[in-house]
Length: 250
Image (cartoon, rainbow, N blue to C red; front, top):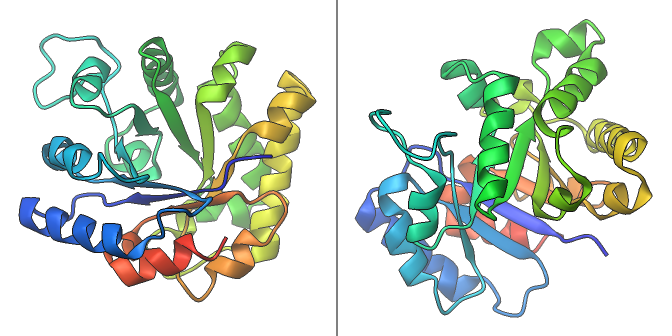
């Protein structure tokens, strides 16, 4: 059975005090016996404290990004070894904001994926089309190319450390959301694309999350689709009650 996952990407939000307060609230509200894997991704400066605060819980901590180099003259960057040294073993890579704002290419993201796996980290790999791609009926080819160029260099055994996160760029932070049918259509296509290269076992086991304006009032319907295995949550992850409602919607 595929893992059910809800991951909260906090982006550039929450001070140290606010992080502590939100985590305290999540600890008190999220059932400890939930079968859904719950992940939070605070900012770099709050990762270490979050790991300590959540140590006795089932809630896991992820980083929002990392650099592909092991070390060196990369001012402001964070390496895989640094993340692991504070207890973080999951990293989000390829987020649309990293691609668009910071101009990360598929080649750079593939390099980051390789580095993370060399450090035995788990990768939440993000990808998805822009509005113009969907309007031009190119959304399937864009997604296929991002998967191929970012992940298809991997060996079969690496896929146990990969979580896929489909995020239609036009639905991130816009209030727009792919319909449950659109989400299922793309998730099914993603799974079949993986199947063509890596076979049934990997395609059937890899978790595919949906990211794009998931909220408490639409999560249950989106998550009910057979190829949607959870969500990568942005704004709604910053409010404990909203995040709880999404976690329990699976």
